[in-house]
Image (tube, rainbow, N blue to C red):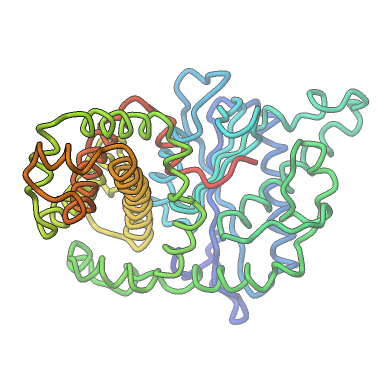
Length: 406
């Protein structure tokens, strides 16, 4: 949140002004001038609605133009998220929404109008599928602009609710409903009363004074600052992790799981591995498992550039929160995969490998060390799975960052 010292026109704030909430709009630099004007009108309408419905806050929608290389017809939303994170952090906005004419690449459904990432407080909105002439055969030039403004306004409100973790409602006339197409946006015209209290609570926390605003610049590089930021935002971190659903990673990241399972099969069929694993005690397996999880997490976080940073090297509360969220998401994803590999290894060794055969290989009694052997091969499988994320490419970043495709 930007400290409230004066209004953009230079006048001092009124005593009854509420805390400011700024949602930066990053517009594609080569956006058609007429379309840009419609977007700005929609943003002003969204601001007016929020000011009327939530008057305890002062709403701002500052705009900035960004360059999208080549203005492609179809673009990876995570590339625009990166741009949004940088500008949001530099401008000290609470949220950022990137608006582009390009169609967004979708992984979970045939097409998408927008994506949101609560972990980094950034969303991406595509105008490609909102134009009435592309979705409504009966659309005419007379109501074209009005319909498009309405749809952009509704989608902006919907994304703000998503960025605050507000659950979808079951009433299609509310902006927290989950639209399946642009036509559904035409029915969504108001905030859901049932979700309003949750939205106010979230916004109240966000509107509070940022930790860096109360901390000297010299103290914003310290571990103590990071720990305080994590403690203050524990609830937000937990909610963001829950929306990312890292326990589904073994299913959603098929290539990573396939690499880990392939390693597991090879290890179980190798006599030398049985001999080595059979002579490792439980403490060493625990240490190896911990090191494997941390190593895999560190590799993936660095390999896929999941952590944000500031050029001046000074931490902010948003940077610490988003970085912690992404690290926990990846760690929990690998922990889930580890648990799956351990259970499979334990079941396979019990069902298919005769204890006498294994004892002849290792000189150890199977029931005494079988769980530790499963932990040993699961640890190796996790490391192989981490290497397998390289084959997922941008899809891994999409799974890690994107909470929802709208």
